Length: 228
Image 1 (cartoon, one colour):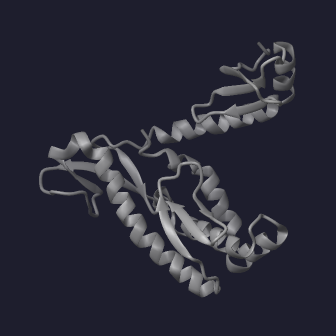
Image 2 (cartoon, rainbow, N blue to C red):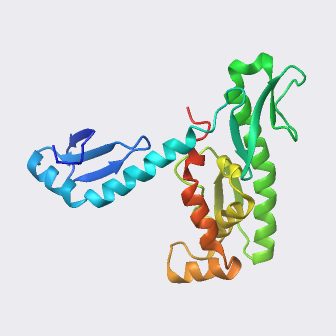
Image 3 (tube, rainbow, N blue to C red):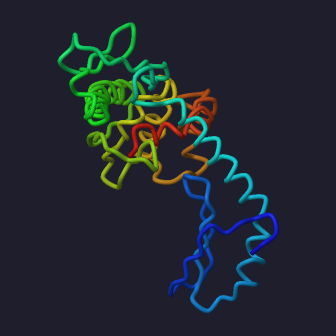
């Protein structure tokens, strides 16, 4: 084992190269070819110590941030960047958003996670679909259609036929961060890569995009809220 760096899991397979992965729970997973010696694996891990340390730190911060968001009574969620208090009560028959927070039928508390996720998806379908149409028109960039997904690895994507996909979890982000993701994917309609021309187009539409991109990086833990 390397000094200072712990390999949490070593997976050997019929692969040709060694890969290092930091999991969402801040563990180091090493995948290596069947005949690669432990000494060689440890040597590579040592050369990547700074990268591993930084990625572990980010993962641990992500886990710490998630502690604040709970479906339990008096817990807190996010909606368009604003805290949303979870309140169980007997005066509603479905999930309802009020000035006080998100009201959950108390007789449905055992199914609260599913009900809340369904509510978020409904909000995302309405709000994100409307917003992408507005930005598309303003930017003069048409797209095929938009689909709301349950992705947890990315905020959005644009495929070869210009269909844009946005995770419903994006509705938890602040409004300008949402706009950035939409602008980003719309620009992929024109440029299918992250070339300088792509980023110039993003900046043309949203001059302060870096601020909102940084917000998403800092709040990437949103993708894990409500995850099982």
